[in-house]
Length: 459
Ligand SMILES: Cc1ncc(COP(=O)(O)O)c(C=O)c1O
Image (cartoon, rainbow, N blue to C red):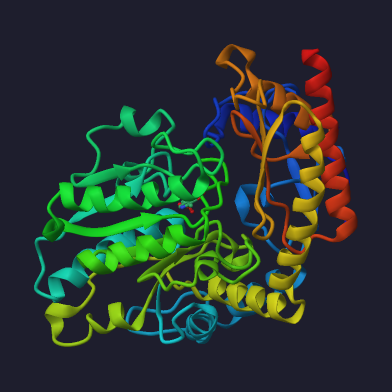
């Protein structure tokens, strides 16, 4: 249903309220200007978001990588509404029908079908939960000395204190030091420039995995609790690790008794063409964390999916219990939205669509190699892609900071009516995974316009 465009004094009042009282995430407060300020979004349908003038914008990254079924799915809203009419919250020591149903549904699509799900309300909480779960697992197994957590430089696991300590890259972690005690960083995966002075991705991949072993050995294995990684890190530019990387990681974790946590806050629920991305490396992590797309972003949700081996360690006398609680974890309305989301995904074969449209989009994006400034097209697993823009394709040299590529990209995103998350050097793409072929064509055409404009600007 189209809303009427907002204009005149109503729009002025709205902008004034936002200008004076709204504190936006990651942007300076108070800027409502046309050029750099906040947009007002009034409705959405499929891959489209509409501003106050009812102009359509292409949602190129499913907002914050989460509106996987696209905007305006009234069935999800209806499911939450029906649940709220029945009961909106249930007391401690109880479970609501949709909460029980969603836990079973998630286990049925998880790598370990005997998994248990601990619900929270978002991605950072899910990762914090996984860290505490790992620590308590070791305590319950008589290994209370294990508390350190290894993560990869520049990954993103959330903005709370512990999860921020595991990430990096942006200013924030250093501004908020001291970080969590026992947080250790290893190298992150780069499928374009390779690390450790290696010359091929296979060599680099082995070194990246061995970096985990070096860190465990260097920090006393009997004190290391967990390793956390996103199967494909959006924060570091959507590098897809090769087949052996996560298999080696799994072996190393097993060798030293370290819990492996797969952060699937972005990659979970079909984004990469499988229910969870890590399946594609044929391994089973100990804990999978999720949030965002479990309800297609319609209501807040998050959780930690523990394998039977992990959750069984919490069964026994009171001392074994996981004393951990988040008020909104397992909220009945969120879970009803989650059940509905997963049902739509099954009925409409959305995971397969993500794979098929992902393969199609990757093929089309690879055609952009004909432009001199397109250095690397990444993806190939569902609908999670990046097009890296470089100054010199032969040497892979990036543009210098004073070229201000990020600013240029955001101006061009505006020009071509795209809303998304361009990074300092890449165009990131993750449209709703319900996207059609025509919509993929439309998106790639807009990306090509951006690349062409950038290239002619340089020449
Ligand atoms: C991989 C990953 N983990 C964790 C988080 C944190 O999720 P939230 O913002 O829901 O706390 C994010 C958020 O974008 C993420 O991308």
